[in-house]
Amino acid sequence: MSEAARSAALPTATEPRMPHVSRFQVRAGMWLVAIGVLVFVIGAKPEWLKLDRSPVIGFVQIAVFLFGLGIIAIGGWMGFNALWAGKEKTIAADIGMRLVATGYVVALFAGLADVFGLGSHPLPQVPFFAPSQSLGVQLGQAIMVLGLLMFTPYHRHSPQR
Image (cartoon, rainbow, N blue to C red; front, top):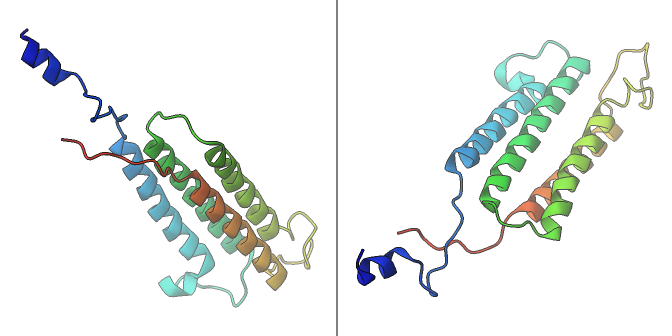
């Protein structure tokens, strides 16, 4: 191998090697988020798809939109984790990952408060999604969004040639 070919194969000081971002994982994460949004909408607003059978938001709807929220959290984590591409994560990113999980737990317990006996309509009454539960789910979603923002990699990627 000639000296010119060998030097062309090695990265130069001005052209650092960037780890390979797995496009499959990023796309899979995006698809999971899209599927999660669809499941969330089916649970939260079934009347948009003409699937509403009750004037109140009951247990099945709550369970479906919380399941969709979980799919969104997993998809967001998968996509952002792939963007880190093997680089060491920052402390903010580690805190962000934990905030996503914490936000989901807050939303889950707020949404299922009646089932756990903590809501305004504990069992054996029919579970009903009260305004205070809605506020708790929204708080959990806000914590999840904050966590995903903290988990976002802000390092620069140079265009691949």
